[in-house]
Length: 243
Image (spheres, rainbow, N blue to C red):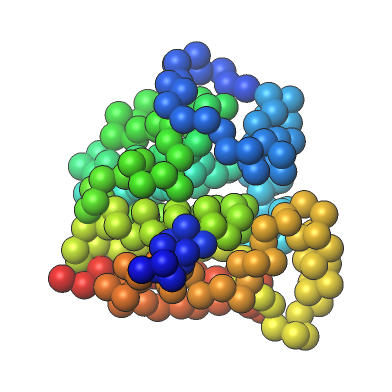
């Protein structure tokens, strides 16, 4: 039982109020304030060309790879806000007969996502800590997307998030993870990314060799398929819940 518990634990133009239902985690404030919590840098970072540069020109390709896994009419959960057009692409994918729920722990990100999704009545954004077990109801969604979130959280919180996201998928539903992966040894960007992780993404190295599907015992209830992209720098993992 103890081993199982260790594994599981292992500014805005839109003035819609954001309920402070949970505190911003200390690791996020310490490590990523400049990237996600600053009203000064957010407008500059949330630009499509910036996102494309960060992902070495692969942003649209990676977004399409995730979006294509979902279908119109689904109730889709997006785990954490994403810079660029990703949320709107997901909302357009599920369409007005579906639902897009976006959950992020930072009020500034919630307000920014609401601004970008303004006019889409079937898209909702709320604040919540996905590492907390009370954030999501069991089987609440028939699709879940986690796009470049896991490399930005420490291992313990990462395992909790994966566990909670898997639990939110209803039987027969699908979950998609897109994130960093260890590159092939010959990849010319391998030493560059090692420095990027060292300076800007301190939690990323612990993800590179991690089997995301094994972070929670709930993973055993899914059928998994993994693909890598851009010389192994990125991975897409798709799981379908049995039953």
